[in-house]
Amino acid sequence: MIDIVRRREIIGTWELYLGVVIERVDLLKKNAPSQKIFEIIYRHEIEKGDDFRMEPGFKNFEKIQKGQLLATSNVREIKSEWDAYLFVPIHQSQCNDGFFIIEEQ
Image 1 (tube, rainbow, N blue to C red):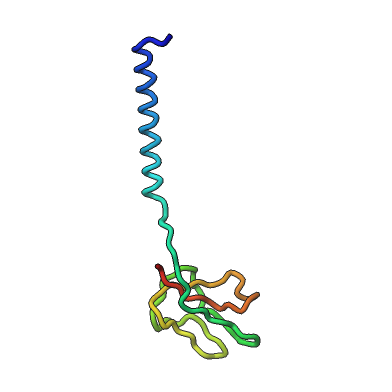
Image 2: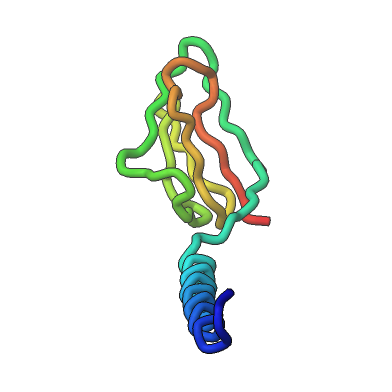
């Protein structure tokens, strides 16, 4: 049978351990990126035979401004009509999706 002093030591050790675990969980929650939801508000379709080229340097979920040059298609400039975000498909050359304009919800 465990005496009362030893029992208190064990309980104290577990309380300390649980306190450290709780602190670490709180830290993880604080540093975790927030999840965001986006809605597609525009899809630029590439038609067969189009000479479509995105402007270089764009990254997915990059903030874009109204009037910003995004791409050219058949020598015509394509500028954003929105202050929003840009999403570019990974396999752009293998599909007919040029890019998407998305908004955070």
